[in-house]
Image (cartoon, rainbow, N blue to C red; front, side):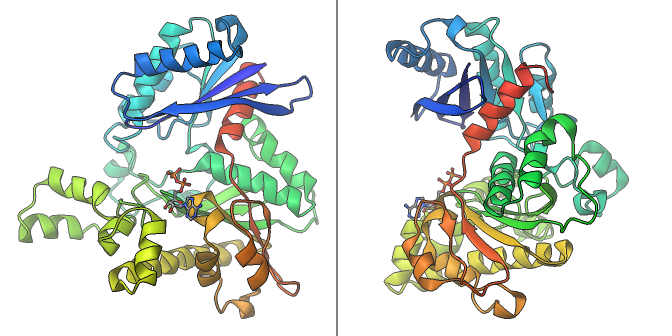
Length: 399
Ligand code: ADP
């Protein structure tokens, strides 16, 4: 079974093609992408032509499904067929104001794939899917009821990545019962846990171009740092992260900015870029800080402080922590940032092994010291594999 995963950005199309054998094991057959996309129809044609030339997909009959990492849908989440009715496109359209960089490209891309590959099942896996079972008290904002009814609540994002971490960390800790619970989550919901078995409490830090921290109990999310939109939580590359809502009317009045301009600055000129004045890539910010740029150092300090803030929140909410996991571009590749995030937490049970941490970049491994009560891991994320697996399950009718 060949499953294509399409990752659509506001100006890009990235793809990966997986082949699953009868036992469900996946092999990555091809990956690629196009930047500065203005015509999704052409980009999709190019992608399919590339797969044809490589001999992987000679016709639509060689493709058994396409999975999409859709972000946020109005009144719709989970893993949903996108080719059988208009539900997915309508849900993306319904929240295009909240996720303007993500929802319109997916709506367009899904429609184009449907047009070009009639009969091939299309599946949307929403990034919010992992948070379907978060307790209501952790997803409500203290807003008037009408705002809540209109959809203003915490949704959470990076669901595919945190789900991957939930499953993989359970495997690393020898908890196959929990790994299996995670695998079944989108089909069965949270299955009962065995009575009397110690709960598995994981804090997952997805630190990358955009970042979030999620608390996970027995494989199921109990809360996350991102809220209504992917602009929230930790400072993002060039997006603002958490901000007091009073700041918006204040800068509109005192700096004489329009709402559109405030939105632009919050989504394009804030985050690590806004703080540092250097750039939105952590490598550049770090290099500037090492050369003595005080604003760049402050940007790193704010990022570390915010990550610790959310780890602390979930440590309390989970009543402890068995594993702390770092993933995504920053989490996988920056030992000094991981060390700063875990500094001086030995009384709470987090002790990093400096040598193991320094040596580990872009690969899986444990970085906690022998005596650390909490296991600290680096787990390279694989969102596309999660999407491909769920797509396969969905089209196999087990959804
Ligand atoms: P996204 O998929 O959200 O664009 P990534 O998970 O690829 O983001 O993370 C991008 C961030 O990761 C950038 O800020 C970059 O600095 C950092 N990063 C990626 N690779 C490396 C690396 N090899 N060394 C240091 N930092 C890295």
